[in-house]
Length: 263
Image (cartoon, rainbow, N blue to C red; front, side):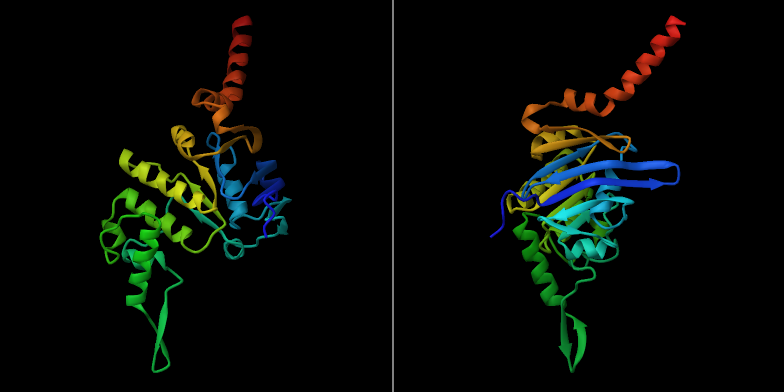
């Protein structure tokens, strides 16, 4: 039986330097089972680097990661995936010339043997693809459609569906609603609600601050590679979040401006 007091994710003292640039500086992050955490900050705040550390794409210089109370060390995305951590990148990593089912099972295609030779089981793949999409409430008319013919929202849903359908315990989403129409945004947010209600922990990286208040339980604000604030979503508002993201920068500018006027 899982201890409900154990965090799904606990990252402590995570640091990463690229030459003279300190991308992450002693960053910590916790995530409970089924929680949706909004990870926000200005460009260059360190959000993507932190998420890539958790997804195994970046190896930190220092710090620890615990998954369900067990310390882990990821040397690659394959290591993170083996620990049931999936990440949906902003570029989606879909193959436009392959159909919906092929993208959902990319690299994990079902096979059948004919005269001892393993062959792609297209019938099983399309049947399972339809079930996967239906279970997540994703509406795609035909799993044989090529991805290049789908709308932006449908493409995003396929990318999320692929990550969500292989038993993740943590799902990281980098700007999933960027450049989507209003109706498509709502469909993606509903998908986030669906997976979190199933106990999947979600990290949502977004510049669309209004989305935070529709799906998140908590937000974490980063600034120049460090944690600067955490808020329960019911204890904050958009104005507060904006001030947390840019307030320090604006305060520094104002101080400099005032010094110039005084001079």
